[in-house]
Structure formats: C-alpha cells, structure tokens
Image 1 (tube, rainbow, N blue to C red):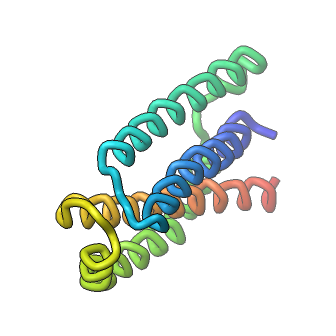
Image 2 (tube, one colour; image 1 turned 120 degrees about the horizontal axis):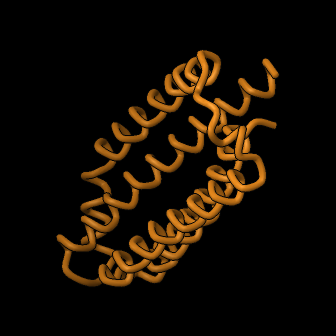
Length: 154
C-alpha cells in the first residue's frame, strides 16, 4: 500500500470518527430541544484541532516508517485518481448543499418551534452543521473514490 493510500485511509477513519462524534453530539442537543451555540462552536474548534493533530501525527509516523514513499512526488496516476475522484464528490456536495438550501425554510420553521434559545443563533448552528455534514460526506467520498481506484488499478 502506498503512502498516499495509507493517508487516505487515515483521513477517512479520522474524519468519520472525529466529525461523526461532533455531529452526533450536536444531534443529541437538537433531540433534547436545546442548542447551546457556545458548546457547538467549542466542539467544532476541538474537532478541527483534534483532526489536525491526528493527521499531522499520521503523516509524521508514516514518513518516519517510509521516508522514500513520503518524499516521492505525485505522479500522473495519483493526479488522475484524485481528479476523477473529485467528480462524484463534487456532484454529491452540490446535491447536498442544494438540499440544505431547499430545506432551509423547513429548518427555520422547525428550529423556531421546537428548539429553545435565540432563533437566529439556533438556525445558524443547525444550517451550519448541515453544511458541515455535506462537506465531510463529500470529502470522505472523494478519499474513498481514490482508494477504490488504487485498489482497482493496483
């Protein structure tokens, strides 16, 4: 398995675990009918920092174990895999963002009726996290599509 494949696996696992945990926590707040914007933003910042630490540590560990692989330049195959994987990821991201946009009136109405707190803040947290979910899903699809190409074309 190449250095880039290993990094893609780490990225998928780390993003799924870290963002999944954060978004699950936000979902629990929503299910309880409360949204604490400070708690949501704090969890977001913690997740970003944790993700950076995990990915940087993984790059360093993999580079120490295989320095030649880590310093190898990207070749045409790597660039092709990344480019072709971007198509389904971008299409999915576009669909999800449009879905959030179309759902915004429903989100606004539901947030004002069922969630306590400042309506503008609650709506911003809900829509912001829906867009974050779309971005995370699209990134995982992008990495997964690259891995699929690496495995398929060995």
